Length: 213
Length: 213
Image (cartoon, rainbow over all chains, first blue to last red):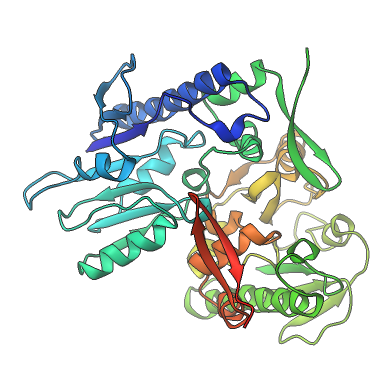
């Protein structure tokens, strides 16, 4: 399956600024992209799901897989890569900041035989989806999971949801780093640990702190 | 399976105070408990998983299922209900604020044949678990999912994780109400809608607002 991975290498993850500097945020975003691509590669190698990855980047990057540069807004750039007519192959869209993704979690995305398969993100987002019908188009603005349900319903398409914590946990804010450190299995948690970011529990809340060393 | 549902009817959900008044928080917490019990009942009725629910409450409440009152801290109260010796039946612990739980999600919790099955919550919590071995004890303080992994490992127990967004989404803060409104299927989302709480998208973020009507 063609798997499109949108990525914005310029000024990424600005909401992580309380914990990481600008160059660090760029490096960490790249580590998360590497983890997502690594999971896709594992899936292709071990699980008999044929995966053809394409990084859809807002600017040129060096990458071990194919890159298409498209600086338009996310919705337009993704829609141009979705199936355009009935005979086209299905296309998956998987966000580059799913640092908790595993081969098992993504295999569940590719499994259901529905026209559209959605993995909701926290806060109303759509972190991953599979599109098998050219009548479907994405709209990533706002509470996109609600819009995607409506778009599928209006086009009379079958829709399946994937109930996955790992696919719901995109990484935007410092609190999200807790999830990466507790549940991540790739380069991203190792990168954070190397940078001195760790999990702390205080007053019944769990957060991250950064050592000054 | 014996399913223990811890519930604190006094001063519940204080972090929802920016959106709901005190009596409203109590009513909403009760609606979420009702949804969890309803899901367990459906599971028992339709799915051939025998469920024997027990609400473990810090104070007396009227309830359609059995209630045990225990005002000790959560960890102590739960540990006293776990299997005590090798011949005891397994026990599940499911939090009362899992407003997104469905029969499908909880069936995945009961499925794995491991000594301990954990459904991680956001922020390092343990939102649901199944204990089949008397060597395991809970510790809900801090990043409990990390502690529960350690406790299982130290006792040489097999441990399985359930990767579920629905079971990861406990409801503590106003932002969590977005998930209830977008994904809930029971009384809790209906209660919120009736109270005038709705999802709004602004500046690329999704939040809740409350109508003043």
